[in-house]
Image 1 (cartoon, rainbow, N blue to C red):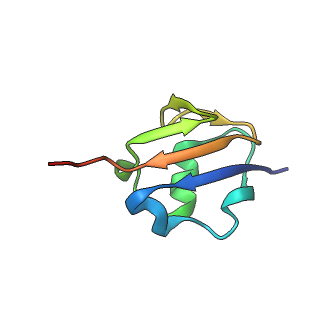
Image 2 (image 1 turned 60 degrees about the horizontal axis):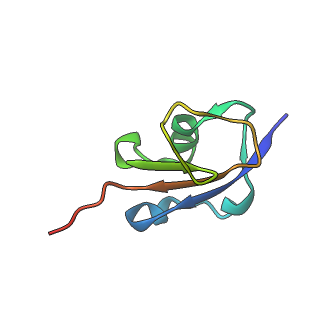
Image 3 (image 1 turned 90 degrees about the vertical axis):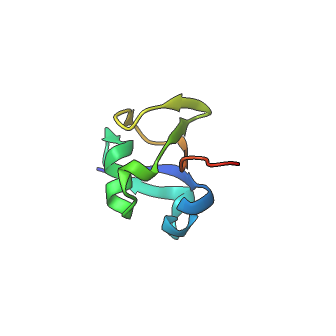
Length: 77
């Protein structure tokens, strides 16, 4: 059985966005870390993670139906 999430990647991570990002298929209880591995994003490139608007970490488990936003480290000058 599989579930879907609404997956959004921002800034330099946008190039990793899968075609079906609005209904990205995951296994039940998949973690953010596993999703990143599935789409080929190096985990060290994921700095800020939001699930349904709340800041989370790489090991949060997803049940399906969530909105997930992932941002790279932000640099500035």
